[in-house]
Length: 206
Image (cartoon, rainbow, N blue to C red; front, side, top):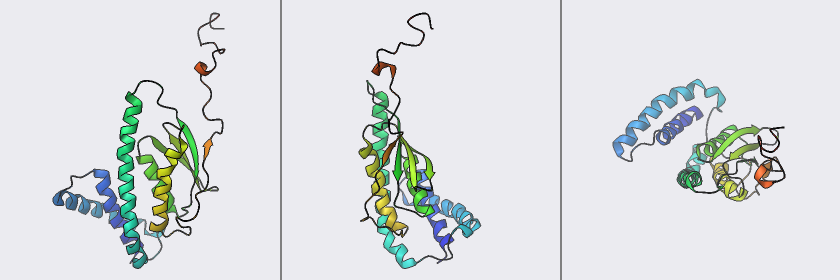
């Protein structure tokens, strides 16, 4: 089957998540048809970006992993919404923004784009850029004090994406180490160094 047809159907499914439709047969079917009506022409116009065909057998085998990806993704969005709301409303310093450098095992354009978009859609995280030479993402996070908690969901998505997009590597391959960028984290605040005078205070704003 031609890959652009599959991409068009995938756009129709993605449209359901974008719209956030009510879980009724009529609502889902109606929005899916709208997504197909828009997705198929778009996929056809950009068909040269895709290879000529797709292995239907491999595509069918990847369906369970695509379902698992969607489940984990939705769960992470729900959890992240509550987490961001808590950090905004809770007293004290609950926010420490940071940029994390996350090397990837997925290498195809579609695989990298899927992971990058999943990060951006999830509240509290944002994909800033993709380093093509290192095949890594720069991820901005609302609180970078627990890097493992940020990276774990990304690695779970990547495990499924490796199978879904028939990547060269597999989930069994070890994930590359992440790093905080820059290495010295955020610049120290005046409160951390009492010897630094407040702006406008002291000796007349010298």
